[in-house]
Image (cartoon, rainbow, N blue to C red; front, side, top):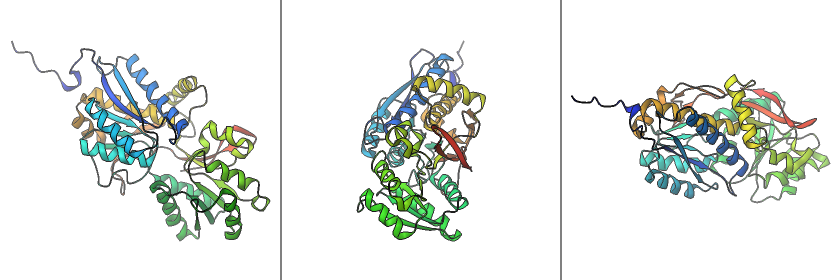
Length: 370
């Protein structure tokens, strides 16, 4: 009697692991704290998947590679992980790094679920291989621009460093604000010391300064300079990219860390799943988890669901993005094609503009939601 073939989801229940490659910035100049939170979310979800029986009897294994915010290092890691036989890639926080990883994954035919990077053009051409959980930069930063206008700010200065990500952010703000009566003045931080920024702000009569620069420097030095200049007592400092989200920001800046609005990808209230995961992440991190930790958890939750349904075949995984329907920590996750976005996109995770409360710097105030 012939034995019928096993269905794809039931292939290889011999205990050999199903591997996922994880790209995470864990050393400088990468944003290390963001990387630690992302990894904590990824690892917690892997542990829970394995506690629940793994991927049809096979353990899920995370192969972690430190990208250190280096696009070339990330591309090399993608090559290595592909050779090691990973079923998919997960992670990455820095947009420019994720773009390099996505391009390589697309070339190799390796599914990549990007956790945190927001750059709209994550790949040059539309691809079937890459999906993303984080909201596209154009979506989140337009919500931030709405917040600026609603708060009465129409003369905006941006302290910017050269990068595709920062240039994209400045362009989104300018294109959105200009038809609504807003102006954006760009201050080139290659040419200006943090103290010189203050004179530029006064000269341009700006009411808001946005930090489109790296963390901790020069962001921390700029904040200190502006806060100490009596001429700028009324100016609002903002950080749409989320620098104030992490505890290191409050540690480095103390009272100066507060009242600096930034983008955060969390709902006003977490679901029961989100609340349970928040408790577990807090225990793992020994501090309050950032939205980046939730992005890590949700990434593995989606990949585990896909792998259970379709097996570890890379092509089947990539083909399954449009059929994903997974309860994440921040809502129901589904992917679609969004105009102007080259990858499969969750449209949209909740977006908030929040700041640290001057009365309690460890507490966040929701200022605007989109």
